[in-house]
Image 1 (tube, rainbow, N blue to C red):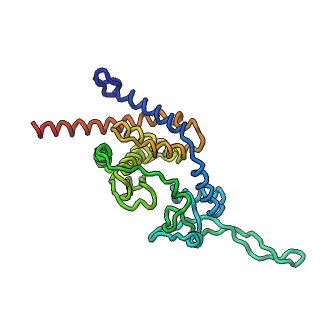
Image 2: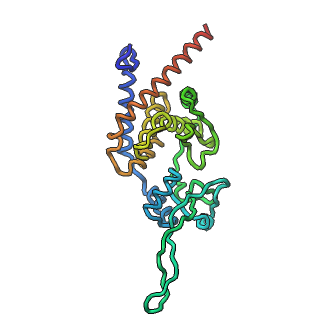
Image 3: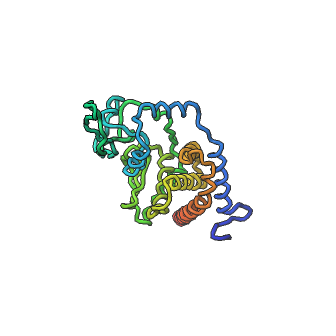
Length: 292
């Protein structure tokens, strides 16, 4: 029987009730998650290595490369034993332009006459010697049948929506979605389990954020990762080790983020679950016909 569009089996919770239970688990998991002293130490060490740019420049950098986190000039990366990957495009930020000038006492001084743009690169665009931030990278290991099944469903849903999915160089990220081209790229270096979680995360972006220019980056990422956690958990893949950390990092101390976006996560994950469930039922029916 169905209740409010959610499939229900006798004496079992409805899909909606199961999603709501998972939302509660996500909320509790993120609320109770805390960074270790080692995590804070790595972040502080990383900041100490990087040039101190203004908030304005950080916004300018993220407008060009949303995943930008730690930026520095080409020369600084070389000093750290790292090199810009071939084919990477520089991020342009502002730098003050000074000229020599003489004051009333005929002493030379520097006078600010304007700003020029200078090239910098994000850490994700470089490779070489390890960085303190590398110790914070969390990966989902393993190759489970549940993950492979979810990947199959996600690829079919994306294909139906004319959204190509490719696996290859994700430019330092685990994956990304390009709204202007309506396409998804997932890193081919990830394990199957991590690849699965990332694909569902980007699938949410493709279905919800393609034309969304009003929501903040934080909202988009919390909603995408929260929905990915719900969908993957529903079909048997636990991504809590990664998802709790990810959502917490985007919440940045805002304990009400999940409360704000909870209904949106519930609605989005519910729709994707129903799409996956239909594909699963079709697959099971086909298998039954083949073995009949």
